[in-house]
Length: 227
Image (cartoon, rainbow, N blue to C red):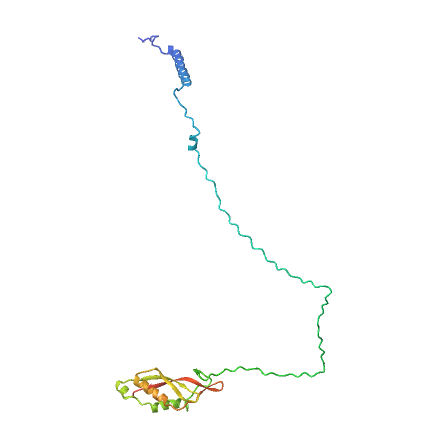
């Protein structure tokens, strides 16, 4: 047995009424929303005093001043002074004409050149000259003289002192030995004996410079050796 539906419970029969009611409600909401006005709303307007808050001060753009170089000083122009000569003054050029005899004999005079010679000062002691001083008989005779005239001091023999004493002296213009002094010594006794032997030497052949005898400084080693 089939169940039968009631006409009052059938919703499909009232679908058109509900749809129309929904449209009316939607349109009513839309109309209310468009017509809605808000009261007690104050719009704050900015006054002229408030405008200074938003005004920013613009800093002017500055550029460095360009230093201009000073102009060059004016050139001093040299003005040539022209001397004006009057027309009534006669200017004559003095020209001397020398007559020359073609047959004359010319004498040629020869002037010898002047040779400057070095002036030798007598008091100057030379170290090196053209002709050096020399012991009579040469170096071999000098060594023989020293070995034959040296007296070895007893004190130096007892202490065993020996070595080379270097003596420096001046050979004068006449060959005399002057100003003997010890340049490098060994002991006082040997140094004294070396000076004695040098001072007692015979006259040397003096040194010569520019053809003249001069004073020359000379150095001689004196050897002391124990046997």
